[in-house]
Length: 562
Image (cartoon, rainbow, N blue to C red; front, top):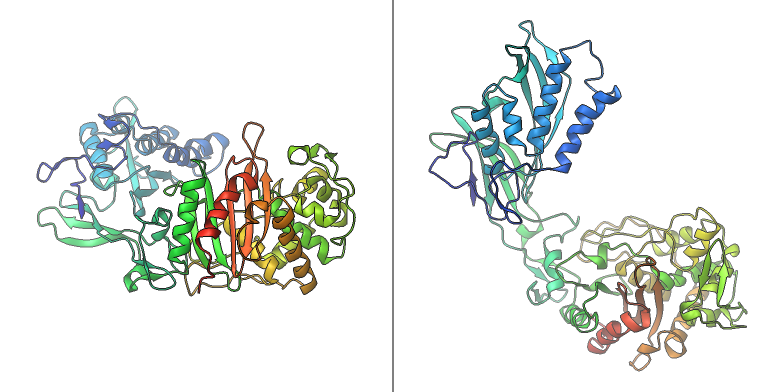
């Protein structure tokens, strides 16, 4: 499909200048309806001008820092013209030229016909010719709706008018150096079908039937790059429409041109994951990931709402007590504690602030194993001095791949465990709070690594580069972690899964968000060759909110996927 513009404000065939779904500076705005020369405050464009022009001038920096060059009034007029154009104040921009009527028609037609939104226009150093004309070059970055950004260079000629006022000497070339009375620009879009996506067994996956996959399908590939629409901006002859040159090309040939995108997903697990969220998330934001333990291949990615932000892969959450898997690993690795050691669990401890257990529970004389299965915050915090300040982050990175660069086949957030700034933050990090950040993909990988001993970079498609380097966990540490995870199901906070078949191990988590919000609920679990993780925003407790979701998933998808 083509989008046409005469780029001068004159219609070729009385074509309407309204574009459905376009929220640029002229034409139709789906939120506000038609506008007539309305002032559009476009923050991004205005900010670029403020920094590049007025802000730099005021601070004595940048190309307009010295008054030894052309008349400052000319330079100020150029900056003002660019600022008005970028912000969509087209009548004001046009009034700064020698031909306001023609200028407004061209500026209006140029942005609307080429579906340009939020232009960023950056002025450069001004020069002055012998005849007194001042020239201000500028860089134009023109975002084209749904395609990309067209970047080019142009110039503003300014002449002093009678009365001493400077104005932009209007010509079509002000907008673009190749725009003329004989040549104009045309936007052509290439109609592209959504990529065909299949699961690990070759079964076609539909975004209609599996709605969590719909936003993800255009972002699948070895690099995780956008594989969406393609198009181009051409310079064409006004009379014949013949293409004289191509100014910009958007979108490259991608995996979708080479046949179906084969994923590691499993249609049965994906369907069960979506159904579990639909049934038990109860309208709250939630996300879930299931993956194979022995190779990291992702079986299911589900989000609620399904058409929103991909919380499962790109979310940034405090993982709460599910992070105690990593904390326990760090303690066990250096023999700082053993599962049968007594580590008292009081109701609360003070470390710069009050830390307490969920529902103010307490377990006097508890063993470390009991502290883990009952998710005792105070016991874990009391062990913080047995780890050096950056040790938790070092263990997370070295053994679990956290914070390294994962190449999954789609955009992901790969976690962060900064070294604590003080004792309070160190205490918080022991229980997955503070600045520790994760998401369901990362936490599914964490429990998979804990029970197998080896980190496998998760994958959603084949052929991804492995950007990680990790060390296997010692077998004795793996054995102890597996036993504690199992005990959490049989007699701890993850008893919600105890009636399911199989040797299930799990860890619950409750993560504080703010005083004004309920806690997020977490649950991670493993059974057979599958690891799963789920977060429910404002879910309260992990067992109460994420528990029914994972229970539903494991009950529906009982077989280990091949």
